[in-house]
Length: 288
Image (cartoon, rainbow, N blue to C red; front, top):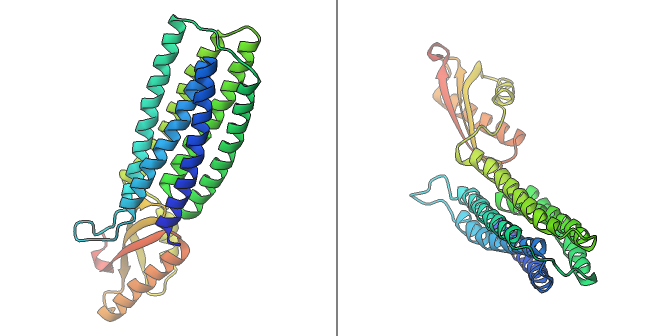
């Protein structure tokens, strides 16, 4: 199974589980009038929505290189992660709004054993989803799976907050149900921040590999005097490298070409994820 198909398979499985969890929380939350449980249900529903966005993103990202996209389409996957973060921010706004409305118009939730059972089951399901999706994301270097697992990880934290709120209601402090829903909104915002931070590093061409490590490695290749102007960019599974290599000015063109191929081979062998390398060969006297 190729990478894109495997990622789509993971997203479909996670989508089904997220929406099953969301439906359970929303149904029980509305039935018991628990604001925190409803907020958590919408959070889980957003998890499922982000899975759909992810499915669309991975389809675009898996398209082959074409004339207009000589570097491929893999950044669409990172761009899609930004879409997930925006969805999270919109969701947090709605949760905050509902919390404020509840503070203005207090309502005591009806908490029973079913509420705790539903929350316990959904926490267990989310824990399995996070572990599975994050592991797959790391293995396949997928921004979508990693960002989506972070999204669901936030869902686990919010679910624990809901359990705390339900206990507080049973002890006679219904206002904490509303307060916890506000805390959930803050946790959602934090998840969005982490996704945007990681995605921006890719989209803004932040350096991916320590240039000093590349320099030390390339300088060990026979025929290289030294190298400089080392730059790296891209995603961790699609790293682009370019560097200038200084050689003996008397080196024949064929030998210089073979040297550049050797350098490419050495870098790709040492650093996983490197897909494109541009080696600029220059004589010693031209070094800046």
